[in-house]
Length: 292
Image: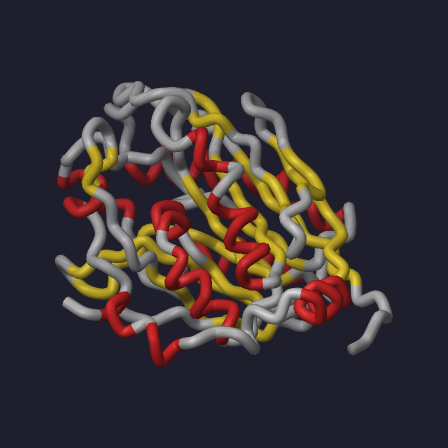
């Protein structure tokens, strides 16, 4: 078991929507959100971030409080123009990046997706959100997203092996364990979640995933209140947590912010050398989990 340090500098961007006017064209709203992210991505590069993750459907509002077909216009191919544009920005700084967008596979087949690019701009693959909520009030995601069908992949970037879990996925420990079994060292969870619904879980579930699976987690939530839906305040507080469940860095509740933390991957070996959860698993007893 190695005790040598292997530090990776990671970043998370939480950002509010600059256009709270649903009457404006979808493409205009998306461009404004992308433009707002550009200086924050550049800031991450200047600060030496090696792996950066953006928030859920980063280039627009969280439109799921409505059930309006106009938002289907927000979907695009993955990889596609938006994910490639972000990857090109990141490449200037030799930065790997996770880019969550609304994906259009074909007409009528749409996913909540995150594209992953390596530090040289190479597209590594994508994760499609598996667990799709239909929660009243305000989270009508089944109207917009088909459940993910790509499993729980991990991506070997230049700096670390990473996994992605998106928002509502975090309530399901099974996929979090699959990411650990596949070799994830850092799992990113881009989210959009409001006060009064899940805030009491925000700092419980994901530290628990980090501890149970012996990896780091980077957890992102947007900020602000988005009109015209006004379902509540997106409370930010994006954070990094280590395999011991300790918080390494945390953002504010109410402002656009880049969160940066140095993650020492050697800690994974140290923790797993003490807590032998992978050795002591009993998968032959877990049949009821996957039973219909």
